[in-house]
Image 1 (spheres, rainbow, N blue to C red):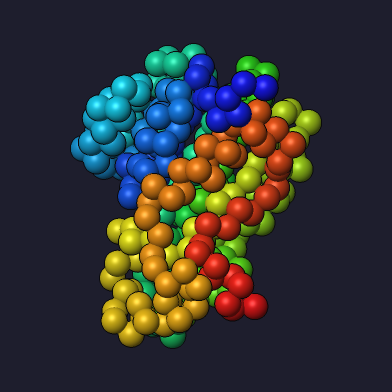
Image 2 (image 1 turned 90 degrees about the horizontal axis):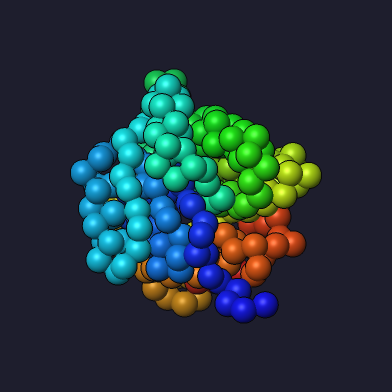
Length: 256
C-alpha cells in the first residue's frame, strides 16, 4: 500500500488554521505532503503559519475569513478554488470560549460562541463539502471537538454545549456524506495550552485537571498531528467515519 500517511497531491482547507491547535495540525498535514489553505480572521497569524509551513518545505497560503460571517466563507471558498482547483480535506478548528457563570450568561455571549464553534462549522462545512460533492472529490472532514463535549466541565457551559453539538454533527454528516465517499470524523483533544483555555487555568484548575489525567501533563499541540494525518489519509482510515477519536492523556478513563 506504500506510505499510509502520504498526503501528496491532496489539498486541505484548515478553517481556524491560524489557531494554536489548528496551526499545529496544519503543519502536520503539510509535512506529509498536503497543500494547505490557512483560513482565519487574523490574516497576520494565518500568514505566520504559512511561513512555518514553507520553512519545512511545504506549500500553503493564507486566507482571511470569519466563520461567524458566512459571506466571507463563501468568498474565500472561491479564492481557494481559484488557487488550488478544489480540496480533499476540511479541517474545522475554529474556537471561542468563555468562563461566564451560567446565571450571568447573556444571550449575546451564547450566540457569539455558538456562531463560531457550532453554527460556523456547520455552514462552513455546507459550503465546502457541497463543492466536493459537485466535483466528485472524495475526501475527509475533520472536526475539532473537546473533552468537555462528553463530560461537561465546570466554568465552560456554552463551550461544552457547542462541542457536544459538534459530536452530533459529526455523526450525522458521516451518514449524510458516506455515499459521496466523504468521511467525517472528529478529534476530541484533552487539555492543551491553547489560547482559548489559558484564562481558565488557575493553579487550582491545573491541579484538578492533572488529578483526572493519568499521564499527568498537558498535551503538546503537535501531539494532535498523528490523529489528524491518520483521519486525513484515505489509505490509513478509508473505512473510518463517524468516529470521535480521543487524544486526551487518559482523561476519559478517569472520569467515567
